[in-house]
Image 1 (tube, rainbow, N blue to C red):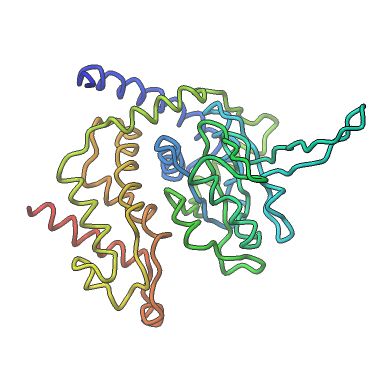
Image 2 (cartoon, rainbow, N blue to C red):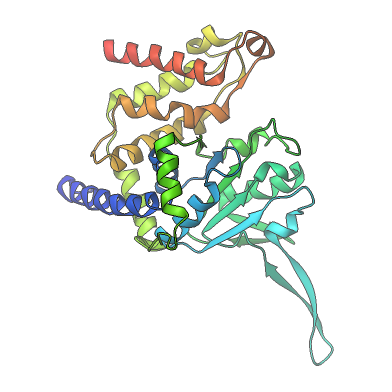
Length: 334
């Protein structure tokens, strides 16, 4: 059993180191603290993140910087409509030896790394998108009947242009559910954009340095799972997730607004990410405010509005905010 004093010391030491890592990322990815916190939280939880935003907002720069700061072997795939599954996973080729013998040799694809950037993932066909399903869930791929493990740790940070842009394919629900969080990257404020101009158009640009190694990130993921979570937070997570499921007793109020709701993986994601958010904020235990802050990033890509709700002008964000307000009010009253 873990000694509470030792655990507190480990959490505090990790929090201090994460502060250094955040500073390294923020000097290159300027003015997007919330985005950086969410992506770091996903990595601390051992999960994947989907970054949604228009082109030119620095999503690629963020992933590249994180690869350096977290000390991970990175790889990048530019998704296009003609990309094939073998371009991601790798393939077998037939080699001929000097003695005339022939044998198949496997050539690893870019997925064999520790941090995979899937750039503009929704520009590839559904067949190619599905090549990442096993990799994201099981941290291995099966090629020619052979199970091949991926790097440890293994994270996918995918970027996606908004669906309304031409030439995109909506991600299937099964793949969306494998992303721990969806991170919306928005336009910077005027002051932030000024800072970006000054920092990136001069003769010298800031360079990131490694703060973690792969082994240290794995150790940090273990610490996250040992952080305590209060009963009130656990009940709030359960109430929130179940209230977003049409058909559940807690979700009857939304039956006419949702086609489907989040599954158990959403509750697992909230349970992990509230700990990571607390740690990144310098706290030892998560609170109800962490549940409220992470509701949209964790739930929005795991739900779908009904046709009637869209016709009424409802949005997923507004619906989640309404459920959060009601759920946390009840928890506070209890």
